Length: 627
Ligand SMILES: Nc1ncnc2c1ncn2[C@@H]1O[C@H](COP(=O)(O)OP(=O)(O)OP(=O)(O)O)[C@@H](O)[C@H]1O
Image (cartoon, rainbow, N blue to C red; front, side, top):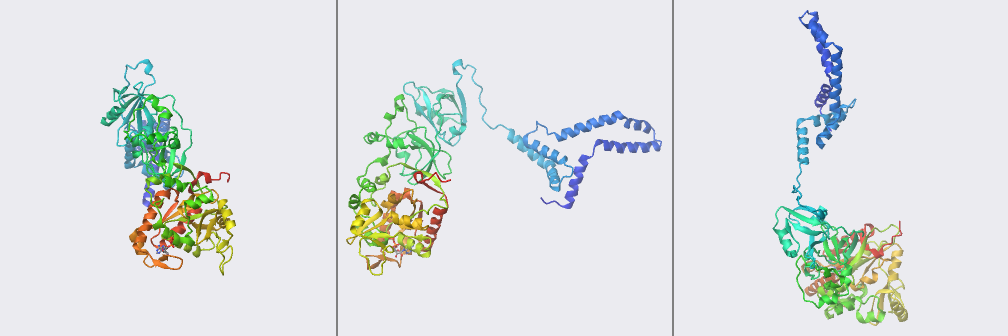
């Protein structure tokens, strides 16, 4: 704190002035009177004897003690900041040699405008801005002891609670209080509380819609009379973090008890589940979302409910926010399931069942592709391909995962852990190979690809274990049957495959293994050992592709190169859209490959991020035993 020399001396004198006692003043007056006696002034003698009287000095000492005490001890009745200011000034006064900063603080706090400001603050802070509750009615009978009167001030936020009606008794209950909502934050309304009155109107026997109308029409304060639920279930379960595996929209879910408090989410969203007390409907919020208020999401029990076929046989009925609930309604058997994505799509089913099936089945189902060796085939195959996962509608692709959610944990790779596997995915032609190739070329000591297996004969100049592991058909078949490959296929009568062990070899050598795979192979590499970080390479718009892919060409077959055509760009965009719709829940990162240099930088940054910063990974990959 800076202070001029002049200010400093003023501060010192102000401090000294306040310190001068009355005794000093009296001593000076006494001296004056003594001089008056010498000058023979009438009455001076009398005044001198009066002022020198010991009792006067005793009185003065008592007075000074009282003054000192009142200055040192802050007034307990003063409001907080004024009192604090007094405490500080008293402490400074008590210092034998206060520093210049302490003196400046003293002057500041003693200045009239600062005291006025503190006083204004205290008077505002002391004012009660809460609503004034009306007095309790006098005529409350003895058996109404447990009644709670709750007054909430209506604002633009929803109440954050739902109600239900017990059809047998006509009673209205608070069905659910949403975490982070107005009712929850008040702490005064709980699920199971019986609603007796709203704004003086008895609600028993009313339809829930009618009660809602009363609430909607109310202005300002809303007065609830409730009988608290004495058996409040405690939320003992810890917060659960999950990744959504499907898209969900409460507005299209006929089974949700109240679509208005439902929370929509998309595949890949990270959700924080804060309340699982209701076995069918959990309360969750999206991670990194600005809103603290939770929403209802279907629980995994709801999803797996055995009666879900029942729902499909029933006509769709739009639900209002308030659903009358009969006593029977609470029975689990009555609740119908509603997750649209449980619908079995034959083609889709075929697609996911691939994992874990035996080799022959896999072969018959799907032709995997090796981007680095057989991309020609894949490009051709898009145009020939029958409607499959790439072209089916988004809704029919909901069944990619058998689960609604995947539990996740925040994971920070330990320095001694092997690097995470880096997986690149993208529609053929988007530039996955180009990016991977450049990454490895720039830093071959850090990045490496796995060596694949093949049954084709070894060419001149090739070395076993460098270009390929050259194996017999029998060995290859044995490896297929034993699920050694995460990807394999036949080309020109020869088999090609990449094994999980080849990937592990690279990782065990401390290098970052970078692979590019077809998306349907994701599940083959998603495991605890490899902890893959999946990067999706997305094409820019067709116009962006056109601008950046003027010169590049791709191999139209093994020997002939051809330039991209407009149709290629449209195809790439279509395939990309379908791929994302089906698999985006598995993507950890998305890179739009427009400018090649920028994309290389993005890829490099993403890989660094994956290896060095905390990431959400499936809980099943986590090893808790590391300290
Ligand atoms: N951002 C880019 N700008 C310009 N050209 C690019 C870009 N990305 C890739 N290319 C070029 O596009 C062509 C196709 O790229 P690449 O072979 O990597 O595709 P791919 O996704 O691996 O598909 P496939 O597996 O079918 O080959 C190559 O000639 C490559 O150099």
